Length: 463
Image: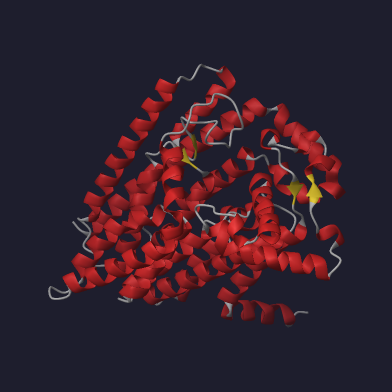
């Protein structure tokens, strides 16, 4: 034993990236089957049933990732397993069979808790995406610094981040996928593989629209880093490929895009409902100071259509102003250190959105993580800010859809334990709302502090 322990330590030291991946994968694999966001998983399970019964064209969702990229192949594979093997306890649980106190979304008439097998299959692509992002981050950092220690630090910051693990392995939300293709866009830009970069950005926009915010910083990057004779050529190559690829991907969804954006930008006012439903919270919520509106759940002030419209317009104006400011600041970057500067250029519009738009869903923080990791290991962002923002985001997640409701797949075996925990949390619902508001405001403060630190670092490097 005395000789074995040093050998194990030596092996881990030599293969630290593999060790990080093994630990992260084990944690995820344990959590994937026994947990899920009850609302989202019910929606996806219903979509899977519709695919098997009515064919793949029976679902036309936007963004389309859960419809055509994930659910269709998963639906047929799941159906094959169900009909080929006796799955027993791996199968779905009827929501009506559970105590009413374990249904956090009664107004949505959820039908199923899909169960271990479906939950696992839906999350497998997310696990793979988390792994791929880890590897790309490792290669980007080690290529930049030639420092294996920093590259391994970047892998830890991403792959072992409890917030990310919760979003991908517990919740089952797919924000890791657009984050992967956004990072690949950066990676191929640095390698001057503009066609690959443009295609990756197009896929990222297809998965979730936010990577479209990167178009202006990328244009600035191409202009500033290309030689005089290649400025036009490189820009035309990137943007023509991006435009063609995006058009081909989005053709079936043009009608959906309009309705989705109109609902986000100008929702109908409703003064009651679940905390997590944007239609029921038209003024603001999430990882933002706009979440102060949630206090209305405690004091129940009247909310008029005129007030909601005014807030919506103010938020949109603030978003435009914030994006304009960060794009202008991006023109000041020299890109002398291209990895850091490009990472910053892509991070800034995400933070501009976080600090201006009135609805910032907690899983959206995943969008910023890859760029924050690069800046953190490079000393541009303090680790305490990175981990602080991650911790606050995780707290918001487990309070927004309270913790016990994420573990409904375990209800047949741990009904009493989940009931006790759910009743305890909901007994102190006012405290939960206050903590949600505080978390949203703290996240905004941390975002501002990170931006100040980045600005200070940029000034010291470019006096």
